[in-house]
Image 1 (cartoon, one colour):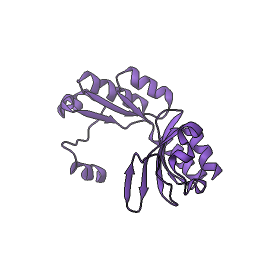
Image 2 (cartoon, rainbow, N blue to C red):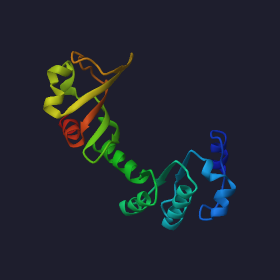
Image 3 (cartoon, rainbow, N blue to C red):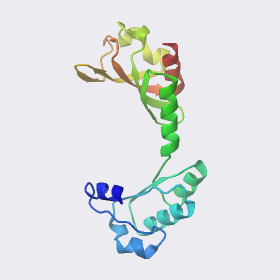
Image 4 (cartoon, rainbow, N blue to C red):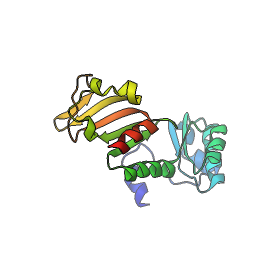
Length: 183
């Protein structure tokens, strides 16, 4: 109930209902919602029922939580627009953070590519992006650089890397990991 009260102040409408009961979902006007988040992964039956009913009631966007790929496949087949794996994704992020102190954050775009926030590798300090030849050598692009004076989005090829700056890069996950492990 505590979480419900906190969220109630931030959103247009909140309700506590039995998601497996169609009449309960109709009573709150579920079909009028723009987005429904089905955050049930432990009870597969309830997750499926809530997703099917939300779809049948015309909810335009349904986001579901899944515990494994099989559950995700079922949820997509019955109408989920997006399926998330919060525990798995957080575990991957934690593993990267534990493997290297230089990886501050990571967003996996697909199994091969990621956006990572990293500390500038020491062997890059004092060199420009063009000197490092990052695209050709590592298949990565620097999207932004966080400096004490602010964020530099899409830095020029002549940007000189500084110690302890934070780089936001996109590229092949394995190649980025190799760069970090070499440092």
